[in-house]
Length: 171
Image (tube, rainbow, N blue to C red; front, side, top):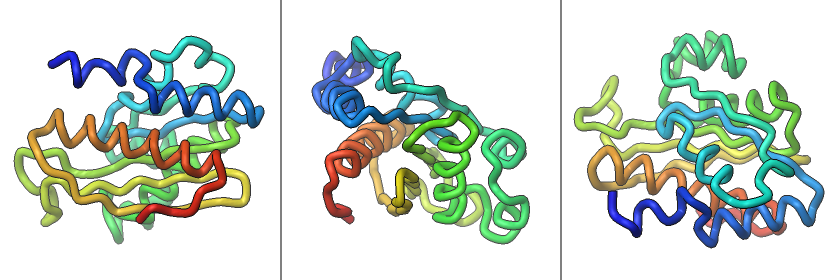
């Protein structure tokens, strides 16, 4: 891991801005992460003062845990699969509800090295759920496993920051 890669995991400027914005808004966040396996929560937790805004996170790498821990509908998992927009949306909502947070982040995707169930490497679905707000973005990322997971983490933090600040979707 390079210093450039490690920086955000120890409180990069975007993560710091997110924690600051959440604190100012009196809001909290929780995650349900498959693809990133806890990197989003770890990145937020790397910021001093994160304990005021980070409620918790669910690592739901296994498909059955997406249902049992995060509350993703079994029919969605069967019909659309673990890597789908509806799954990311339900992960975000599930994180928000199960952890009692104002905002939920849900991430699922394929980091490679091989496609999964016909879905290309680099396909990522990012779900955000908050006060009166739910959205899902499909990202197409490139690179090796680490780069895809790392970039998805940064995208999630940037997009939640945009939402907390009241911005419009960027995708």
